[in-house]
Image (cartoon, rainbow, N blue to C red; front, side, top):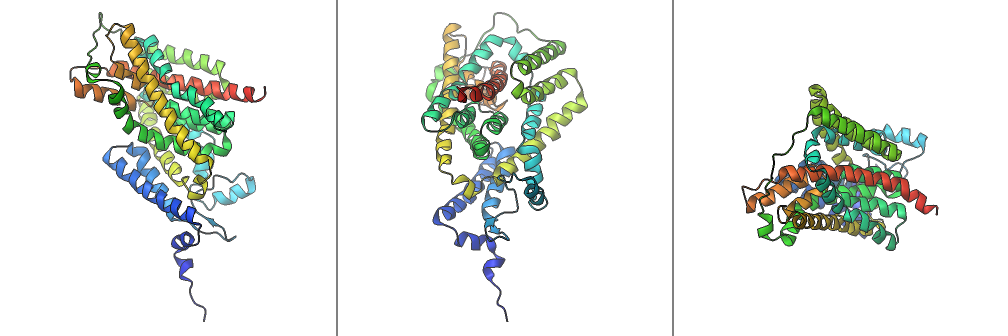
Length: 407
């Protein structure tokens, strides 16, 4: 009589027991990290829409490893390494998230959907009120995006990989996804995972950076305006969106899908098409972001993340975000001196682009020290400029980096 192999019944435990010590530690560590992300998302410390599905996916993918028919260890979620068309079609019939990964994630479509939703939420009037100030702050807040590229290259990464990880400094997940997909296909998955993981952690850490660099007397500054801020009509905002879209697509065709996605969202908002606004800013944006979180979680598989390059990416990613935050605050100080004290330096952190998170962080910090100080309009202007600036840098990197490699 044949005996039943208990190990074949509880394969998650069996594969763990038969793995190398490094894999065992990585799988258990990622399971607990996933649980921690769910907890922090539930508490509101991190963005729940991304971190809860990402955390649970991370825990599930590292718990649900089984023996595949060929004897190797694998999972039934997604295979990011499959590229052969015949094999891919077979996998798409088995791995339940594979169609979503192949048809939306690995081609950048999900990033464009999210960018379209962001466009619907943007009121470019905040940018048009103080365009030069907003753009200056946004450029300062790209310091990490610029400086980490040569640092990464000096640490042994290729120019393409260096540009992809440097984009984490722009604090815009869809931009990182699109850049790494275009320039660094082999490291596209870990770079994107690192980016979104750090974006959640950075927004929790930026308030500490602001308090460290900006004394209370500066944080409490209440800005005054000699004349009322000009209000712009929907027609003016629509004209701005159309012109910016055409100009940027003309200059950087390789990033045209991102520019189009962002500005079609703005155009729909300013055209007053409420049904489309509700759909794009609601189900499309939140649904795409939720599914992105799930995919990011199930891509955090121990074998994939034990690549020696991952440690370098982890260091460079947090360095990029840190330098960008410092650059933004320094830009805020520069505007403080240019305006002879009539500018709150905390606004600088809002130049780090994720809309509207860093703008809300800036207002929350200032509001604690001076409840009568309202900096949110200026912060949103810098925030929106940050999105556009990051998109432009994406276009620059995707266009110029391949040229530099051929010199």
